[in-house]
Length: 214
Length: 349
Image (cartoon, rainbow over the protein chains, first blue to last red):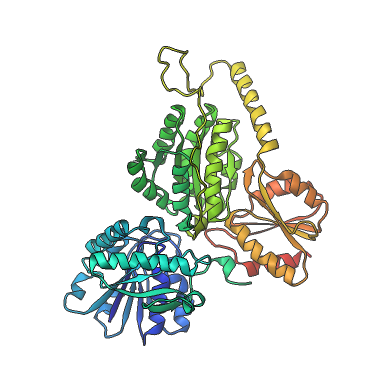
């Protein structure tokens, strides 16, 4: 199966992509981010190597140049029998990079997740969020198959934030008919959360230098 | 109000809008492009002006014009772009105009690289442009402080009629943290009687100018302006001090580097080393007095920067030989890690 993770930047796509990849058997993870210069899937390279997960990332990711070239190995990955997780960077601009691969999805099943975070200013209501989702679908030439509520304000997230995000996710689902597949967040908060939606507990891998311990 | 999760660059743009900025002139460059992107989306919706100029030189001169007309104007760039803007900044300083310039610093010199750096300290505080002038430089170290500093930058610019730089490294521009925005209802922007807003035949024309034909006239003007700079040095120094009371070693760092240093200090304290931090928030005016006082009480000062050593010169001037001032720096887009800073601390105590 090919899993495509989309959403506004700051929605938490990369953490979800990493956690999803870790739950699969022998997956390939693709860092398709052509927008963000740093804080991306490739940051977790050491962990991925340790876990035996193959990472395909733009050749110049995390270097000193802006060179949004995508490696040809992506074609091979999409033709393989492996599970593939694609972390699509940025917003609809980032999703343009995905559009070139759309022919691979014409007769192959895929799951495209749209990650929402109500605490991000440009996706705090259903109108703006649906517009962004449609823009991403247009740019990628693919259809969103499920919504993940990943509402968070990093370390200050409360259960109330997540439930507030759940109302937004439900509203978007009602308007668009796209199902809400999961609610994600750090384990300690999700554990006590009362919800009927499937919980997707996350371990966080993208850390700042001062969060990594001495 | 609920806190929101924002990228440093977005937080600058949103804070500027809330501070009354309706005129933004930019030119894209990594790692600050989100500022322009945010302004491009938001300004048209609130009756503001976003303009992507044909170059950095054009953008800063648009700021010059807008500031002269009395509005709150801003531009943003990253290191090579600020070099291009430096001529315009000098003109703005020479014409006593308020504006905010954002520098989200990347590695240099030349095209350098897109990863975080702090190697534009000299350029910011020693005058990137020509002539006798000063620029207030505010260097936040968290996304919330970025928001607060953006308001502060506009207020200081208007108060003293001069350019103010908001400086952060690429990491601060790109990282995300929770932020809350202050309530601005009822806040009125200051009147600007000097602005070129049209005389309506009620007053003499205001003139925006930095050219003076007679040397003695220019000298008198600059000397008068210098009184303002001295007033700023007396009244506008901002810094954070932590664990300095009992410290045997003081670290000096600003911006995101100060966060890394704090992690190293925590480890040092856990291992019985009394380390403290002085974090300049304003790089000019520089917190010389607090560093000077601290230098007399400690074994050593350690300055940490993402450069080959720029702020350390001001730290040494402040310490004035009262204690040794050591330096640890990474450059070229390499970010120091707490473990390395901790090793440096151990070398000097």
